[in-house]
Image 1 (cartoon, rainbow, N blue to C red):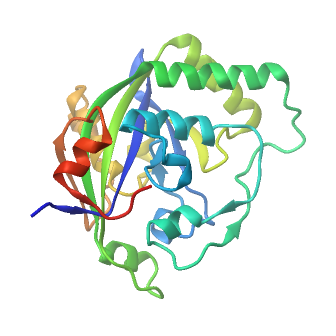
Image 2 (cartoon, rainbow, N blue to C red; image 1 turned 120 degrees about the horizontal axis):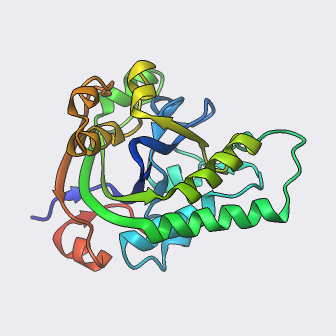
Image 3 (cartoon, one colour; image 1 turned 90 degrees about the horizontal axis):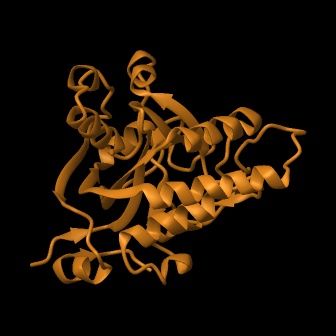
Amino acid sequence: MKPHITNMATTAIIYRESNKKCLFLERKDDTHPIKLARGALCTPGGNWIGASAIHDTCPFDTLAREIEEEWNLSRNERDSAELQHLGLVNTTETFAPTPISPNTPITQTDREMLQEIKRAVVTAARPYGDFINVIDSSALKRADPSRNYSTFSVLVSYFTAALDEETWKKIEVLQSKFGNISAESISTITSLDDIVHEQMHVAFGHDQVLRHFFRSNGYAQQANQMVIVPDILSLQVGMPREHYTEYLAEMEIMRKP
């Protein structure tokens, strides 16, 4: 019998090539429909779900599409349609746009710089590993006792993207000017030092994969001090495949495009 997985996603560990402890992450804001995720860090990327994912042929396609869609300087209302597709909420609701520095003019240079950053991340992306992250209902319910949740599992294809100093400086420039370059979450520059010192939470099992990444790059002692959200399991199951048909042949993906 094929193993059952709720859905698939792709995400990237984006780091400064000259210092692998420095990361470019996103943070879920306090209006996120899943309370467990509120205020938590996550690695940029997204789910293989919905109409926009129909033409994704592999996890790399999903990563490139999600970065192109989500990293921009325009702001519109968001909705929970994707979460409804995933079975995590019952209805589609709208909520406020992500924050951006007010009264800050957006120039053509800014837009071009952001496109350069997106191209650099996609170009630098290298397969890191496939992990099945199982989020137990108890973890979800602990954060939101008023709702009934079911345990769900996500096969996440992780990539790494090592950015050179030129690209990293561009990220610093836009982050300094706008405070956020994501229309989906809140982008942030942080580090393993900050994550440990401030005891930051990382969403949906990405904490365990980040710890795996830091351990494999010589920072095991510090990585072992990271906060790990309880009742979430992350298990490495191989490397990202070249086509989604390979996954579909081996497992039952319950929610997909």
